[in-house]
Image (tube, rainbow, N blue to C red; front, side, top):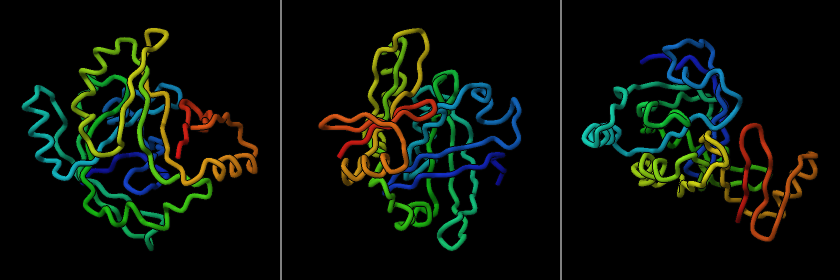
Length: 212
């Protein structure tokens, strides 16, 4: 088992989570090395896999060059301080320059998706999808199509970028109540916009779009 040389905080939902990560030992060989000089943004997209060894075999058969399957662990600050264990792999950054893309097989999902960690004051209950703005939408659709077969998040929306840069721009989040989300944000003094179907919050490097 090898250290990931990063520390992270998570927003845990029912079957997904959002991770905020800081690299503690940067270097060219770090798995996030290609993006360390960039501004804050969505730089990791990891999809859940029931059998990561089978996923790797499928990736190789489709012409990809994934990393070997690695095993890692994280000490949790909840679940009575238990340790979460998982296996993971990354897909080649040449194929996915927008972010580190790969798969994870949770060996202790009952610890990661701890029920008490999904009781968010703003009502958020699940990460349902992401929006990618791409300079070449056809190329992006071709590259990301295999990843779209995952069960969670539910969707990946690809839109035309205005310039030459491609990147993830929006996280779509389901909430129990848009009114509850709005009240929580207003009480905290956080700016947002709202229409009948959604509420949007500008965050560093990404928009958070809430819907019921």
